Length: 472
Image 1 (tube, helix red, strand yellow):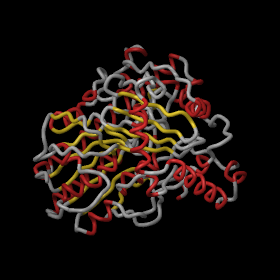
Image 2 (image 1 turned 180 degrees about the horizontal axis):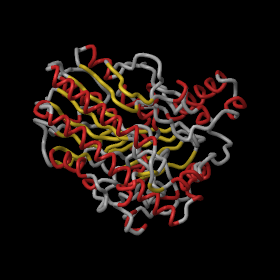
Image 3 (image 1 turned 90 degrees about the horizontal axis):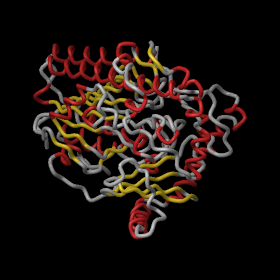
Image 4 (image 1 turned 120 degrees about the vertical axis):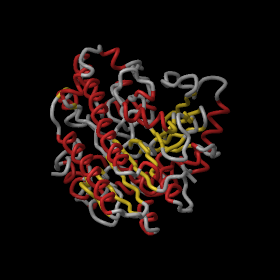
């Protein structure tokens, strides 16, 4: 067990793991995240459990996989069931406080002692149009991503500033009151989630860099695969970009990461100034990544590392400093981590990141899955050491060796000499779940929800939700 008893959990939205100095991008400006990595453990192979907001955040809350919770898509938000680590810690006397984006259903008991400035799914129901997964035209409004990219003011940036201020205020008041109970403070920012608009000063950090310099190797061309071709057609963001727009988008994304890192530093500064550093662990991560135009894709929703991979850094008293850990981990490991730090013994699907940082090496694969917008079939990804399987129900699998091919340029699934690895990983996946059964369950639940909201015609006539607006 680490020496800390409290946790400051800093969460961002849509942060591609590679866009941080400590993860190797030569121009990313992330001094506070980098300092956390220098003082703690940086996990190089961390995944979300679904590369889209609502299912990922439900897995994070519950410590359970998507097929176990049934939170399939952005119209199936977490409503407090099944129970979360928030519930467990609160029941043990821990003060569990959330500040910022949750993206749950706005009703129900999510397990926090307090929710400050919460962002939940719109109208308690989320993106109903994301339930449509077959016979799809290109997504509407995709031209906006390119048109908006650049410097400026955004509601998301202003919301994140309010989140940081509220978190600092909470720490100040707690210190002034002299409260002694254990706490978990979850501070959840929305940047660098699109729209791709960065404050002018943070955008200008990257104004003189060329597109190739900004991308730093994000140049993998599209590959022919029936499911991914269909996803690329539906999420046709890239067709609206020329190189000038791509450069603006990259400067904006790097600028939003820079601004978010500054807010991370503000909150950590308040933690230190109020005397909590000696007994508080700090965990930084994100709910999923962003493709950033790689392979002709923007946003998330696919199983490449740009979308699936997330930063994961854990630092604090009693934890190893300056360590780089290649053990695969995922967001379902957060639940046992905060319980471990709080001194609570409970059974979870995941493993404490503190224990892994301390040398524990769980014998398990990491699992992710996608059952949401744009995909006419289920996607499952399995990570076992260096090997990554992507299994599509009804479509060819993919197999990558992340040690020799971190950019995932060479699909080994159909190449001679890899049939045994493919079969072994597929068997491991099937030992966890039956892909066909899970795929059918997701479609059946989505069909029931479509019917409950008046049918496809009624939903199609409704407004689009390009992104959930920040609360007023």
